[in-house]
Image (cartoon, rainbow, N blue to C red; front, side, top):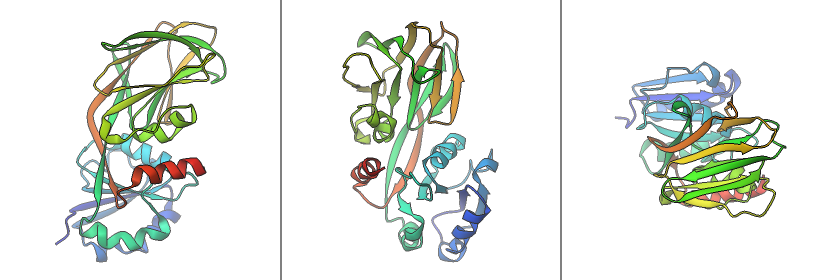
Length: 267
């Protein structure tokens, strides 16, 4: 009997879904049910699956995690995109991993989501990063950052990026942030194009982070996982907090952090 009752497979289009179907998961894993969806047509359809296989780039993973409400669902990310830094296997390797998948011979990387609030209204979640930045992504603003129980600092920069450990090898690293082991339960606060040198700050993900524009002509926006741009008023405050929700990523290679780092550096 299969360990999985319901498997959902997401891909960007019918052509990609056809490639996944050639692996014949129905015969090799024998779940009670297996369903195939295009990423942009998945709304409300994947909440109850035991295993979610996402075939695509990192954007497909972010979109899928955003739509997934069940924190117990396991996710296997199969890379089809040019920049699948977070993927565990390439499409060409996928069939080789079916036996390990069937027998649960893998580890699980648990990623705690972060939540964004504008004033008191929740505006979304992220597994990678939340960015507070100038609308043009070029102009400078005076930004105030307050970290619960640690204090406040102000900085002139294009923006401030708050990343999870998963996101520490992405935009955060490009902006000068450190690579963080996910077991640390931490968040990284990194300035984007600061006018003066400033070190990134690593804090517990139990800390509430408040970000406010204090000066400058640029209008502020919020970007979460590259999925959505949220325009806010000049006087609005962005609050970022650790979520109770987690995403569980299947890892066949225990050195997934260094593997991710190597991919990010190559890209």
